[in-house]
Amino acid sequence: MKAALVLEDGRVFPGEGFGAEGVSTGEIVFNTSMTGYQEILTDPSYHRQIVTMTVPHVGNTGVNLEDPESVKVWVAGFVVRSLSPIVSNWRNRGDLATYLKDSGIIGLSSVATRALVRHIREIGVMRAAVAHGREAEDTDALVDMARSSLDMSGANLVDDVSVQTPYDWTDESDAQWYGDHPAAGDRPLIVAYDYGIKRNILRMMADRGLRVTVVPAWTPPAEVLDMNPAGVFLSNGPGDPAAVDYAIANVQSLLGAAPIFGICLGHQILALALGGETEKMRFGHRGGNQPVKHLASGEVEIASHNHGFAVRADSDLKGGEITHLNLNDNTVAGLRHHELRAFSVQYHPEASPGPHDSFYLFDEFVDAVHGNRSSRER
Image (tube, rainbow, N blue to C red; front, side, top):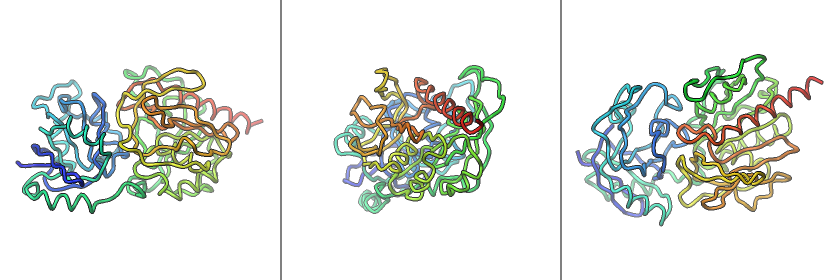
């Protein structure tokens, strides 16, 4: 069946449709990960984005019950060069095309993804429309749809993806992937703001003996403090961080009350709460192979990224300091405020998909949490 991806600048990329039929709009982005497409599809940070995979062959491992990072598929569309006709994996429970169809998501294969990615790198990310079926025949109408669709700049998408009511998280990761976990003992409470949180972040904290309560993104600081948490976590999520004004105000009220750790959007919100600024990137960082330098140690870690906004390097963080840089373009990849006991990273130390170089950041958060408990108990 005819299918096409149409960009707001008028560029058309024809292909073969799979998954659901119809039309969808979103920001066209690309991900350079070699594996992990199911985790990518279910990452809430991709809400309202059409994701292109740079790896040419996708779908050969099918889908399973263990890898989803949330309750649903969030991408607005999925574009690949070649959809595998064969599925073979010991955990497989279905094929990618059926998975997308059941989720109501349009897929597009046989696309010149190399040309598409080069175009995005040269021009920058832009709005797009993907069509599967007879709608793909009217490319002029699709261009109009793309141009009238949501602009990610100024968009608060956290309201769409956040949990509506609090819940407790206790599940740990599978020991065959991450090794044995320490004995539970007395588990300090962490309150995690859900801006679009990934499950493996929660598993990483549970693995380290933390008890986690996840709360909606708009939860007032007073309610968080009433829980008497030993630490506060700020999650990843979609959209423009500057547009989530209530989250920035909430974090400002919580600074200094307990150790704070932020990842991705949470990192950006922490920076804004400290007085910094964020900016839209030309095409962002999305993939499991980004080099990040830890400035204090000089060590380089290969990290998983998924973001289209970044903290401005010239931001006044009111006593905070930049701790990590992305070596591809020297954008800010981490910050810390010692006095307020807050730190964050732009990348994803929980991976899923991606390397495990950055697990130490969860250990640092655990140390800060236990230090906070000790000081309160004296």
